[in-house]
Amino acid sequence: MSYESLKREIGNAPNLITLGRLFLVPPVIWLMDPVDPARNLIAALVFAVASGLDLLDGYLARKYGLVTVFGKFVDPLADKIMVAAVLVYLVHHGLVAPWIVVVLLGREFYMSGLRLVAGSEGVVIAAGEGGKAKTVFQLLGICCVLARYEYRMIPFDATLDFWRVGMAFLYVSVALSITSAVSYTVGFGRALRERAAART
Image (cartoon, rainbow, N blue to C red; front, side):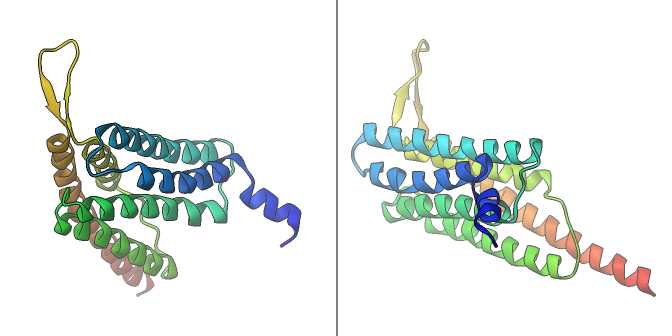
């Protein structure tokens, strides 16, 4: 691959944004602190920005025809690194139950493997709404758990416990992780059966 083709493959705006998300992971980890609310709130905001950039790079790539092999590989990798790093930290400090992280990360590994198998079989199964909703609840949950203190809701005379809200989001994400993985598996099996039937 020539320098110019490599530059076109990696150096477009969506891929640079994806790489920028990877570079935001260390600051999030550094900012997270067991006892400092301000640092944790900033960490949550940085994580939210990184999550928002995930939507932006995908939108730009599709809108302007900048989808590349590099982007297809690095974009989901950046998602997994960012989420896994933060979840492991939260488990380490007792903020999230280990089983939640096992389910969420285990599902990601399972789905990655299943997509590889599906691709090798020439089967394409579009991402379902359950998987997309799972991602939204997962990211919202992580943001809230990072910002995990009670905050007064101005102008309302009430406080909101972000940790409880975040855990509720994560529980929903766990449920959607399981159901979407089952749905994808069933769809893959159905596609294989239909293809086998068409050949007979």
